[in-house]
Length: 175
Image (cartoon, rainbow, N blue to C red; front, side, top):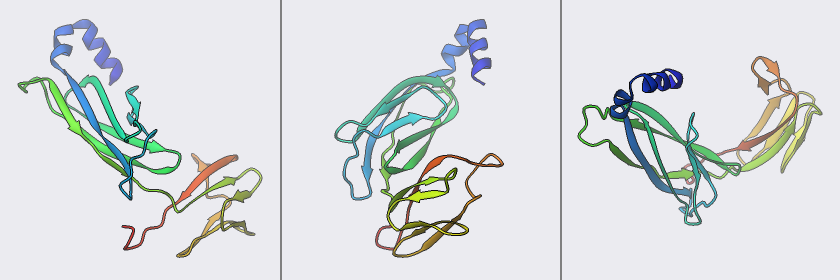
């Protein structure tokens, strides 16, 4: 799509000017307790548009994009569950203004536990973890998780290397 759009814009710049819109997306990234999360990466997936939340958890992205289109905005950090939001860009050819503004706030959840699994050496590290004869075990106050040795794959092939796994558990109080 990007290659075709680029070729179209080179062939007829006026069409591309009418089919693009100026987009501003801003918001705040917080944890489940409402505290600001500075340093969280916020990006438009599949593009080079990205920024980092400031010390108050605020972010702003400003860019030009094709319209109409559907974009996915992602907030991520190695310490929190990833959040994704959808943004619908309206058709600016028929719109009266080619500027579009969105407010997208994120609430990211802290994992109950973060563990490291090394599938090559069949080891696991983290609180309440162990290697069993059949796989890796992670125990929480609510559940015992068993991850078989061959469950972590890359495509159809068992993955050999280290992965970081986040365990999330929700109850009625935590939501």
